[in-house]
Length: 458
Ligand code: GDP
Ligand code: GDP
Image 1 (cartoon, helix red, strand yellow):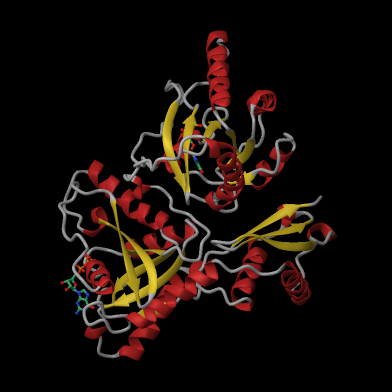
Image 2: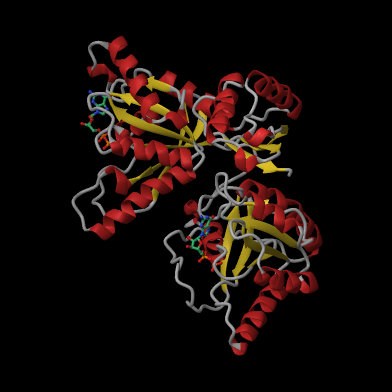
């Protein structure tokens, strides 16, 4: 083990959620109600190629009661003292509170290394809270979402150099033994290396042909088929060489074969399906061409978008279709009408049974992944922004024009942009959509969620 990381912060900011994500016990309980008292929890975490011990100091309620507050302080101090690095978590949506400052104070005095993370910052949320956190003087806050797995790449980049430093210090000590944590399929395997397999999930309603498709890609009958609902609830993943591209395919038993079960089990199964989406970089939404679009398909595709995954839509059982050109047109139209947020997502037709169209699917996955990782230079973005505002100036509510001053890409996977502007509260949603649609067409980014936030500059 290379180092110990303590997750520190006031109650309810998402420490346990982050702990669970890093340790990978996804079915561990996250409690919504305050007041659940636990002691320090320890687990073996992995993030990409990093292996470390993580300590969760969650579980104590902030209270007026002196003894409880004292206990919380002692507990936090113990976690801080045991750790090489402290990850100080705040709630980006709530901004910096007095309780946060209390913890910041402990950290400033005792911690060896502090990384500050503004949690619950999924999508466009928490922009201001993250900015406020700068003011604590503990460094630049990472924007993360423990629940949705966003920002784990940034966390990796913050930890990695420290891990190297500790490894260099420990070189005289006993050689590291390989710790067996191989229930580890559940942890995020994020690594910024080109050789890493591309992670995909194939989702869709029962009988769309998911198992058939995955088996075809694997070229053998390796996939577990037809477990009873409730028996295998874990994500199944298999490595595959899909037309020369290494991939890892996530699939969920619960979603695939859903028998009639009680509400409770049903709920878990759906969560499992969604979990497969969380593991994936590219989500293949598989449709049965014989059956029209349904709410269920849309919900699945929409979830993939909300989670920030790249999406490829594949219409399966194409071998059964007679009027192919007409059908393709119809599919494309209904998709764009029903899911405008994924405008232009690649739509390919396949036959999982015959294997026809798998080359198209392969190419669409590669392309979607590339777009999802795309980085656009600030110079190009600003040229583009001034052309866009010239063609269509933002409105001038009350005679004062909203100014969009400057733009930059802050993240990839999926691409996220920030525009510095004045009077952003007055900017209509339609203008934001105009910019997002423009980005999508002008920079050729079909099928990927695009995040655009505005930062107010007064
Ligand atoms: P802890 O008390 O700091 O350990 O916080 P928990 O991990 O128990 O989380 C508190 C609440 O915040 C729970 O309802 C979580 O589901 C929620 N939560 C945790 N992380 C996130 C996140 O990234 N985004 C959102 N929206 N909610 C989150
Ligand atoms: P899953 O529930 O989504 O995993 O669906 P399956 O892979 O079990 O397939 C459901 C049914 O559709 C099976 O009878 C398959 O043989 C059939 N099927 C799957 N793909 C195709 C295809 O491309 N063409 C035709 N004609 N049938 C298919």
